[in-house]
Image 1 (cartoon, rainbow, N blue to C red):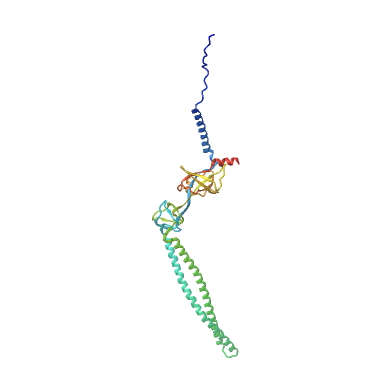
Image 2 (image 1 turned 90 degrees about the vertical axis):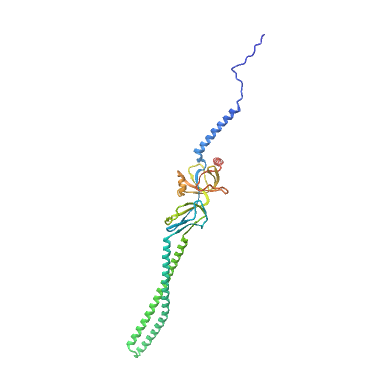
Length: 341
């Protein structure tokens, strides 16, 4: 019998293994979807689960200002210059201070002259009182003797009257001298107090004026010169503004999140491509009394608290007034730990 030749089934396809390239593409696609979802979640919902805020690099500020109207004669510092506490930053003159010192000095001199006159009067009264006291004792004794003679009928009445009048005058002069002495002593005491206060005022005014030398109150960096040479400045108007070299970050703390922030927590400070580590040193219960630079940088919306973050030891802070971003350090482990608890 003739054997038929087996024919291949054209409808049956052979099993072929998928190429590794397709598997890689599939995993890349899933990873891209996962990364996109994570990015979208972090962008729109990330602030609910961890700290994400904006801040500004600042330092403790101080100003150099006069307590009286002045005219600026010279400015000895430039913006960006480092200054030491006590160094002269500006030289000023003040006609008001010069007139006040002259007036107070004249008042002190007038009071000293008045004190000299009163001391002379006091010494004169003291010397006369001794003699007036002796005179009063003599006239009193003479009148007593005349009273005895009058009783014996050996003295006419007019002599007794003259003796009484002499005693009255001596006693009147003595009491007047004593009263004058008391008045002089009281006036001397008052003038001494007033003179001491005037001398203290002159001394304080000279110390404050310091020959027109305006000194830096802190070690810091000059961030602004508010005046120029020849400017007339009102009392209290700043001449130079300083910021301490010790820098920190001031940032808003958003409310309504599912996380907790406490003093001592570590955060990441990001400025461009630079990152630094910080430690929360203070959480303020307000968001109003902030530096004007901070308020201009961004407007607080639904933000009720303020964070102060110190840079960790060894970190190099960004320049002053740099706008930075704050994020919680170790976001994922911290959030997972809180969910587990």
